[in-house]
Length: 136
Image (cartoon, rainbow, N blue to C red; front, side, top):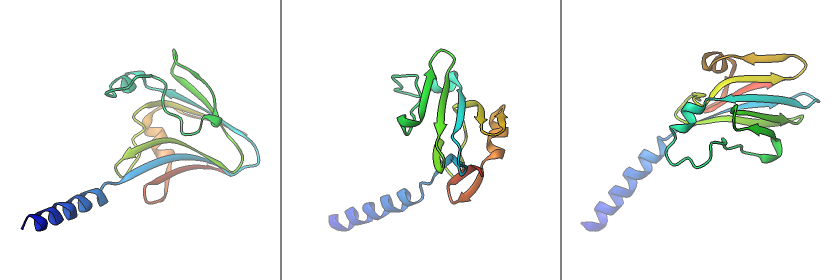
């Protein structure tokens, strides 16, 4: 009977883990030129994260980081041709962009997204849980 309870508990854990979805927001550079991205972070939201030791947001690839101003909370990153930059990830079906106030993208034209609503509208779901802003 004890063995059956352990198996049942294990199966319940698998079911709940399988239902846990994640989403990612990425900027994709499909051009032959480098793109520069400025991310203006929301300090008050970052400070709410429990256990956060450094206010510097996590960047998935330090090779893409040009610089980070910890006073103004502005990260400047580059995206090489045919490369991708993940700017947000979230548990759930949609990215929330909770830590980003403003986003500027410097390509042939400069694109400025002034708030979370504009940012969310600019990213389109390309596959389940993946939202992309593509430059061609």
